[in-house]
Structure formats: structure tokens, C-alpha cells
Length: 97
Image (cartoon, rainbow, N blue to C red; front, side, top):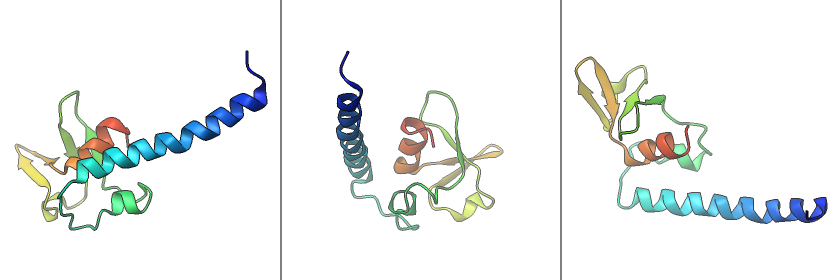
């Protein structure tokens, strides 16, 4: 078993690389996407995410915003609004936020 100090040092080295991996994946997901909100979901540390809920293992994410029809990425189907923003879907599915 490694000494406690070594383990803490290893964690400190791994966490920034994990954040860099997420940043890289987010940038790849963004691609050429244009966002009417200016990508606030990532530029403000995931603090300004629109309300959404994951719906099962598929790529379905329900939009829970108060006025979902105002969003360019919302899709109305039946009695629900779904999010079509690939970045928001990624954040919801992979980061569970």
C-alpha cells in the first residue's frame, strides 16, 4: 500500500487530467454548434444549466424549463418538450447534471 502522501499527490495529478478530458470531450461535442445562450452551461462552470431530466438510456432528455418553446433546441412532441442540444444531452447523460 502506498504512503498516504503519495496517494494524495497521485489524486491531485489525476483530477486535473480528468477535467482536461471532460473539456476535450465537451469541445468535440460542441464542434460547429452555435448556441443562443453563449455556451453558459460550460463557460460558467455548469452553474447556468437549463433544467432537464434524463429519460432512460436513449438520447432523450426532457426540457423542464418554464418556457421551453423559447429555446431553439426544444422539440415539442406529445405533451412534452425534449432537448436537442447535443451539449446539454452530453452533460445530462455523461456528467449526470
